Length: 403
Image (cartoon, rainbow, N blue to C red; front, side, top):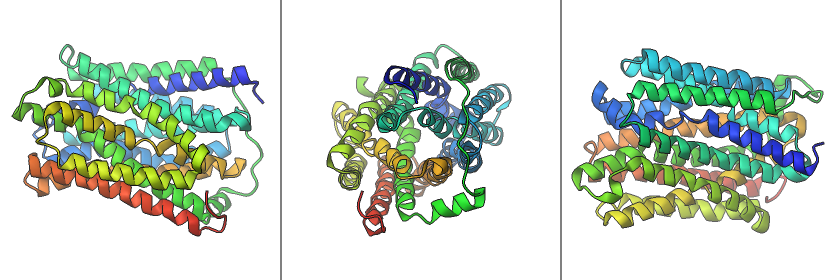
């Protein structure tokens, strides 16, 4: 096992690589107003464009993450980061409308499928048991760092560079992730598996506690990625209808909202340690639901108060993230963690796909972008996290007892 000092160095390498691989994560959400105007997209079509990223993730993750039970996850990570970079380069070179953009964007999501959870598996495979939970918290929190940095640099550069060039920058971030993991993480081996792939999937899918965490993650991602996909567009609409300094740079607000995921995720994992995982989750998820409903009714607030409420809401929706993921990892046998994470990611990022789409459908159904349409969109986010809370409530009925 790794000594403590080298263990935290390993965590740092994987966190840096994760942030680099996500350089292009916010490209479509940040550029959605521009692309929607250029390609004449409805809100529903724009929702599909944002959400299609997670279709690539959803289709690839059962295969790529379960592979990490049979081969070193580092190999999956390296190949997938390269694919993500090539996909963003392809978007820059060839996307000229909705159909082409969907194809390249889902392939970018496929790249994330082979880096996010396989990166976590590669990390935890190399960490002592005592460090795994906190290492997981820092790694999952870095997802917010990477996403926040992506919103930030896209906001700062989109007025200076053509949007196609921005996708090239995102591709360079994926290349940097390849270099960091190639040079900074030694190749490893995989413990011998007991049973075949079908048996592993069957064993994981009949574990009610794992299924409950999957349902919780579905609701979490529905809310989180629905919010992130539409936040810039929402603030841009607010700025167009009632200009104010607080909404003049929506990408900066989105970056701040995303950065808040970092302390929220880490604090959430510590809260789960202190008060019990299930108890923590069943408290913070309803809080997030209530805040979503408050945001849905707050479009006429002074802009400073509206932005403040959005930031508080953004923090609340991440209090469950690391606690959910650490729960799956710590309650699964080592030789089945890849399969468990594959199921967890597949179910969870189905929520990431549906959240932005249902938000857009709700906006269109209520007359398009406007006060009523935005209210309906945010209500769908409350519905997503409410489902996640219901799923976590099923843990108490599992044979293993409460978390």
